[in-house]
Amino acid sequence: MSQFIKNNLTQLAVLAIFLVLLVVLKLVASDGLLEARKEFDRRNLYQFFEAVSFDNDLVLDTYLLSASAGIEKLSNLHLLNLDRDRLAYIARKDGQAVAVAVPAIADDGFNGKIDLLIAVDMFGRISAARVIEDINSDQIYGVVDVINSKWMREFTGNSMRDILRLSWQTITPENEYDQFVGASITPKSVANQIYDALVFYQSNRIELMRGSRENGEG
Image 1 (spheres, rainbow, N blue to C red):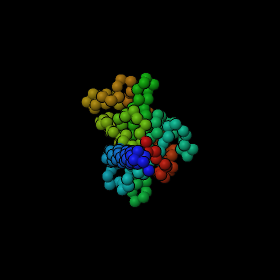
Image 2 (image 1 turned 45 degrees about the vertical axis):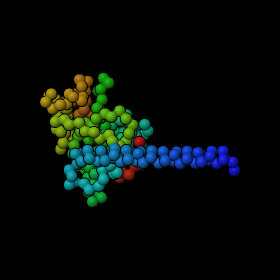
Image 3 (image 1 turned 90 degrees about the vertical axis):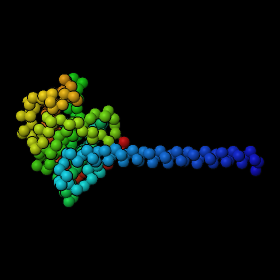
Image 4 (image 1 turned 120 degrees about the vertical axis):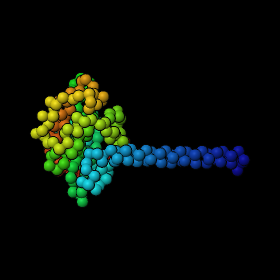
């Protein structure tokens, strides 16, 4: 075998090794990023449930809600007004579901929208309702970036029959709500969306409690 051929084979072998290393590094980086996103959500989800009320991993115990295609096992999915795939998060204690956090999007028809995550217990009471930062992404993980609002905390402990009262409460500048909502979103539109999310939850509570729908690794 000529030296020229040997040199070419050596160069090809080095190139092949280099390409393999690039692929491996990319996979490792991708896995690391995905784990970081999951850990981000895991930390933030703790504020939706009392720490002593669950003992499972909220990021791994989920139900995938698809915005692009109907899920035959779910009723009234349209009430969530989702514009991208999202996860519902199931909290369990000793293997039994105790609450589910359901995503939703409030929209008042004037190009204003706000991402919500509403945790509801097995009795239909709201454990927590929070505004989630709109990351403008199709990612499934790394999206639970909570924006604090005193007004949103008013929903805690309430059920469907209490929502109408909260929808007419005045939002003042002191509660920082106007920083992320803007003039086009009203308290009534947010309260109405939370009400719709509760209707969806009540319609699908048993199915959501099962969890374990295939999750996208987006």
